[in-house]
Image (cartoon, rainbow, N blue to C red):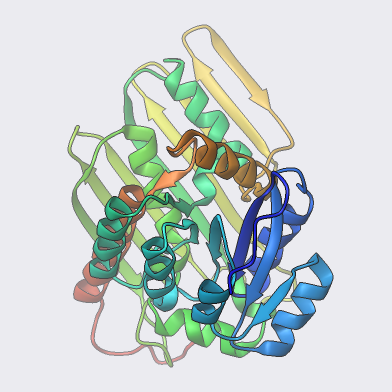
Amino acid sequence: MAESRVGGAYRVGVVGCGMVAQRHMSAISSSPRRWTLAAVADVDRSRAEASAKQWGADRVFEDYRELLDEVELDALVVATHAETHAAIAMSAMERDVHVLCEKPMASNAEQCREMVTAAERSKGLLAVNFNTRSGEAYRLIKREIDAGRLGTVRVVRFVYDWSNHQWTPTERLEHFMNNGGPITDSGVHFFEGIRWYTGAEFASIDAHGVVLPPYEHPQHVVASCSMTDGAVGLVEVGWLYCKRTKDMGSLFQITVIGDEGTADFDADRGTLKVYDQQGSYESKKMGMDKQFDRIFEWFAQSIQAGRLIELASAEDGLRATEAAYAALASAHRHTSARPAATGLG
């Protein structure tokens, strides 16, 4: 028998209790007037029980289908691996439950299209959680674009290089590499960002990658994009940067070049410098990470309004995923079939 809704807060369930899900649950628990954590589910029951205890969830499940059948929800967060996103999200949307889905939206474009169709039929909303929509640096650049300070956007460049899973369990790296590697896991954010900044669609994508044993997919990819409005985009993502060094390093940059100005963000310094016809200014101490409190405030506002506010849509998720997998396919076509003599796996 379904449980009844409590108070004025939206009842939300979370499927998946891994690293990213913890940040979702933290944001939910910090906003009790907006949200109540009704249930959590994870195939690892002990992990689900630990999350429920930490964040105050009412119910614990191993199977998301049981969660959906037994608990009355307003919304569901899908924070599992990408290959399970479509089935979970569509099951929720069939029940007219609002869905906030982690990126990548799904593990291929066809699944994304099925999710788009399900969202069109559902009374629930489907939002996809990209860094670009909530991270402070991304949003400040978007404000500069929308204010006209940069003029027409001509070039968008994202560089996101680090060792990523070097200090996390090997199984985690294996999973991500077996499902496309950095261009699909990380790069999907930046393909979404190129569309968001230019307001245009992808006309063509050409990519090159570095494939090292024991992996099939490239561990470093540079993708060049032509947009339908004539703009160009560059996405460089890789997990080889400082892979075997004593100290961890990273190279995270965002550059947007317009007819009348340029915005340049350097994550190492945490600074955004904007040049326009009046001069230049520099903003400091900002990052690229998702702001989960902000995301859940927007999600609540979206449910109340009956339309997405600030969050990326299912269509946005589809287009970004299509681009990421097109880049992966292009990188494979351009990569030599002969493996490198030594690997950094």
